[in-house]
Length: 161
Image (cartoon, one colour):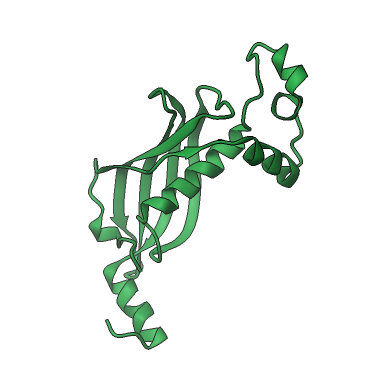
């Protein structure tokens, strides 16, 4: 387990993920999985004539990439209990095929709950392209183990603390 317990997060703490290039394969696969075959994503000729002038990635694909880049940071690897919500998510600029994006997270709040094994973490997520533009942003709220919760989990699995 490399993730952090709720007590290990500090308000204002900022971390940045490695980059990831958004490919045509990503967009085509997401269109197939989601069923969203809007021609802005799937039709080069249609999108060439559009205000964007080219195909763009799905907004929901950007959100999904944000969750993957969050995992890459390792902040919650093995300590996340459940996603509680995505709030105030905004799609500020298009993500173009070939853009390389990274995730910048800022801790907004980290507090224990009334249950001793868990806490609630709120992070500001910013998906940033290679030009430094924030293309998507929002808040992600996650239930996270406390140190006591990790110890209890290890005891249940027979691991040494």
